[in-house]
Image: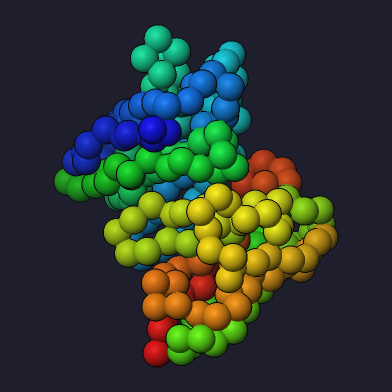
Amino acid sequence: QVQLVQSGAEVKKPGASVKVSCKASGYNFISYYMHWLRQAPGQGLEWMGVINPSGGSTTYAQKFQGRVTMTRDTSTTTVYMELTSLRSEDTAIYYCFSHYNWFDPWGQGTLVTVSS
Amino acid sequence: DIQMTQSPSSLSASVGDRVTITCRASQGISHYLAWFQQKPGKAPKSLIYATSSLQSGVPSRFSGSGSGTDFTLTISSLQPEDFGTYYCQQYSSHPITFGQGTRLEIK
């Protein structure tokens, strides 16, 4: 079936980097853009950016420019989101979601905790 | 960036009630408006796209309307499983932005 499966929870120290993966299955991976957003504890949804799996082009929210990199591996139908220079405010659940069916499906979310 | 403002921030309603949530964009977004439902501990679920198009599998008691800057999500007859937080989202331009959410509680 159509689904996105994300990598597991991460605990990082301030200043470190994290790379979260999102594996797509059940649909033509390269045909649909993939977005990333995050949700801090008890907060709303914050869009981080989008990648075109076909050519790899990206658009990032200005807030994350210089700290976020989205990449894809077409051979494994996986997209990656790397966030660098982590700080405590980056503690959040990170989600990927596809344009396959109008912002559906979504990954299950990956909790990233930044703590010294 | 386009700011999305939802109201109310929270509401409590009874089973069978008609519920309306509004979303206002800081500038015109045509029909590029989506609605999501999120339950605690779960990823958001797409309900409506392009202002009024229902996602497959979403009950017909959900409907959306509006254009330009003002939009509404209506639940015609509230059911117990409709609790959760509802978000509007504009995808007219990047960055994609969301409303702050409306928490819906069943009385």
